[in-house]
Image (cartoon, rainbow, N blue to C red; front, side, top):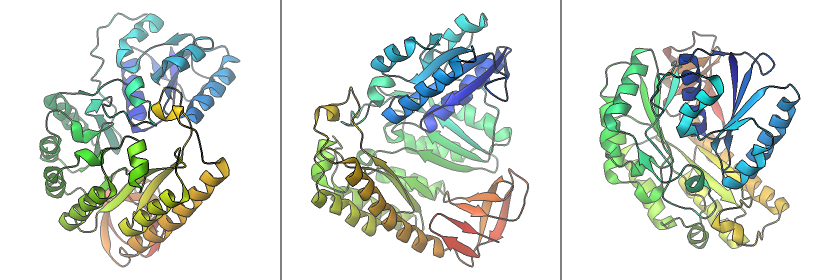
Length: 393
């Protein structure tokens, strides 16, 4: 039997798909090169955004015409489950992957939370799942449940395995790694101390839990990239979002991070057009962008999501205005990112080749290079800089 996996969503979904693939291979299935060649289609969905749900539904209806067996998993709201029950053959929770035995008719016992992964240059290791924060716009606590942390020894074992197999970047992954119950800074240091040549990264963090201990651990582990989602630059909107910090405290933490780790590349997540966001609120977000000088930002236009508290609020910002605000932030980001990238000009830096002509820096920036062997570290001189990347050509 051959399978094909379609993934929608964040790094957690991608990691889940890798583990799901490993489970299927261990149970005698082989991966197909296309949907048409597969006997079993698995769709790993993300219910966090309506657009992803709509895309998945359209794709499944398209696949149905090919008369394939279709299974659905991932971050799934109950209302979406009912919606998909009519068009797929089987639905299972990603943490209950052993339920797939009902489909592939195998009896081999497995441990759902730990699979050996065929390593690539970059590997995600989930250290926890779920979320306890209940931001008013987010469905993750309802789709993945409350926070559950994996044991440190299990994570270390997995990282050790991947590094021995040649992994070059280890990403520790969670909806909020800062609230990992077994001391996240200590976990970082333990993984960093493992033998082998690799870079260590993590995602994602919540500003309210970002500690000085973690900043010191990042410095010790030579982590030079951080995504710290702020979501809005206005305190009033943050309160509506149930984000329990203010912009003053956020900026203080950024200041400490920059002091301890000079040259660190910073990215953030932003929602524009949240219910009640007026122009004065949005101007505060623009001001924050200019002050912080982000290297990258993931800008999302707010869309109502059934099941969240924000869905009860009136969507006061028009789609046209949301798009306008997105463009305004992107313009500021282009300026700050270019300014940051120009600092690399003329410098010789270490990069990891991820494609024939593309490498990535330790600060998570893409750089164009001469054709090189994928999966190797090399030193290159930066000759060009633009807003969204570097070049050595």
